[in-house]
Image (cartoon, rainbow, N blue to C red; front, side):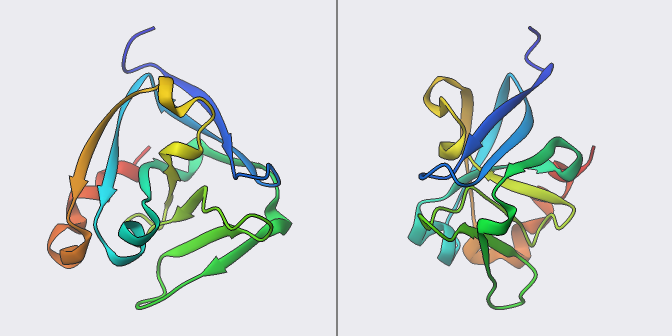
Length: 133
């Protein structure tokens, strides 16, 4: 398979109540963001267009948290508290999928890129293209 060819990867929360699929290339980059919520939760994520994301089960088991500008929609499993994905402020037309919530995440060909979310306004433009289909 070409590194640019995409395939669907399954993932979910810790308890399994929330399951999703994301279409990703064989090799992809994840953002290690240092904003307050990502740093505190250790979230490292990959942004995908909404057309490359599907919620398979658990919509009724999601709880939403917003803060500051209220544009990012952080979605958590009501049972186990895990944020498998969220709708990012930088890409409201996409999803930020938590890399470690993908099934078999350790086997994926991933490069980790630091992202300075503490200075979000100055850096958010670097992410805008990630939700383009």
